[in-house]
Image 1 (cartoon, helix red, strand yellow):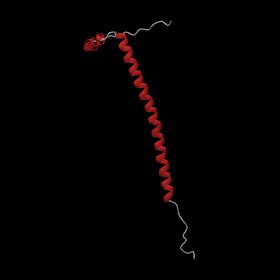
Image 2 (spheres, rainbow, N blue to C red; image 1 turned 90 degrees about the horizontal axis):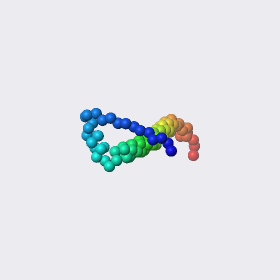
Image 3 (cartoon, helix red, strand yellow; image 1 turned 90 degrees about the vertical axis):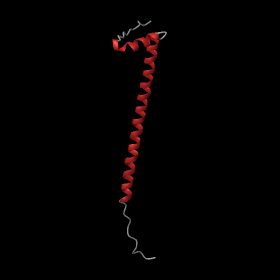
Image 4 (cartoon, rainbow, N blue to C red; image 1 turned 180 degrees about the horizontal axis):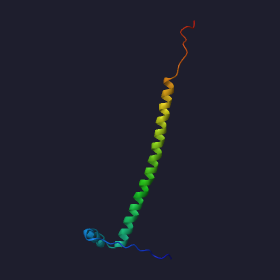
Length: 87
């Protein structure tokens, strides 16, 4: 079994309310571990959404660029003059 690791937290006088809040829990260490797990999940979700959002933004930007190029090509299309052709 792996050796347990320990983290010590020191609360300053102005943080006494946080200390008291944590001590009110049935298990301060379990509460802090659960809190860390929740924060880790939120961070992972945020990073995954950020990555997906960045990809979506790049795709949309690419589509807009292609659309602009296509419109420019449409505008420069020159058809031959057929008014002088006989029926």
